[in-house]
Picture 1 (tube, rainbow, N blue to C red):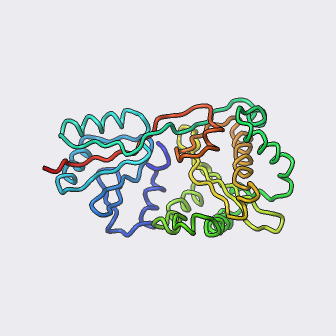
Picture 2 (cartoon, rainbow, N blue to C red):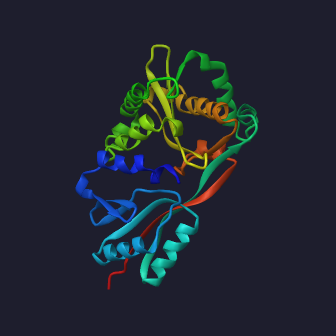
Length: 280
């Protein structure tokens, strides 16, 4: 089970969305917007015949079904076969190689010897300058205090100017906060501040039951970006995961990022798909 199928994730939907826009189909949850049902679960999960029958009824009402961030798995094949059998349109909106990182060896050695010269330079800069900053960790610092830092960083970043910050995206912040506050064992937040406690960058990760961490959110303020705070915070988080688990097993989720691509040593095909009835 990944975090997007957990009860905490599901119960948080009511904090984020209007109740009349949340639609439960079997065990699955969708957000209804303009006749588009967006599944609120990602990666890979079970879907049974009863749930597919209910989705078929939704499509008969001229609604489209969207699944985001689905792994190239048996679930994807099942949905494709089901759509074909019912003469529905099965549209791949996007497909890409989502970066992953698995390490049993030293993360420090991996970064120092990375094939990308920019990563090596940034890591050397991090090693020389990390003592100039405070790195706060949700394992030993009040998580709600850290979340206020996160919202401040989001507000003072380019995302706010382009209305893609968490509060502008249907209150995305309320989707993550309960998981962070309650499921401390399977969540990890690191915030980077300067010596005056001005928040510069953060990295948020959630873990699945099979000990795979997902890079949920990562960001820096405008000031933080000028000081390379985003990548420095990410380096700190990678080092912390190694210290915490003894190894690194990380899925960067799939958001396109050159940094993630430079850091990866593996990948998985991931897709956004849309299923709907072809208009006569």
